[in-house]
Image (cartoon, rainbow, N blue to C red; front, side):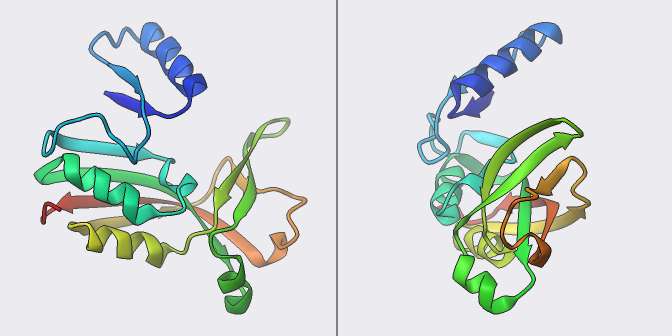
Length: 169
């Protein structure tokens, strides 16, 4: 089952579903703050580059916690943007940071919220998840937009968190 709030992304996924003959894949337009599933109904979840668009990660993780079975696992991939000046980082926390996805002239311009990695980890812990693994990657195909005012003070990386549900909330 694939969820996305964007009808454009659902349409793109439908095309890929047909191309790859993924007949069992269901695609649903829904928000991660209101997942249309029963409590404790999901064994494994994937949140692929979605949490970075929510100001309140804890709220999203509470809803994910609700639908995850005891000992269920969720794999979360996200971009982590870091402002290298601590006083500036605190001032900009929660702000939108312009990023470019893609290579060369084939780029899509988006914005990610500036959320410290600690904010993710705190939300995981407070919603009953145990962080089993944290994997950091170079940001191939993702960069801070060249016109961003603080680009020289900013770094971006891709991170995958592997979490296990322990305390149903």
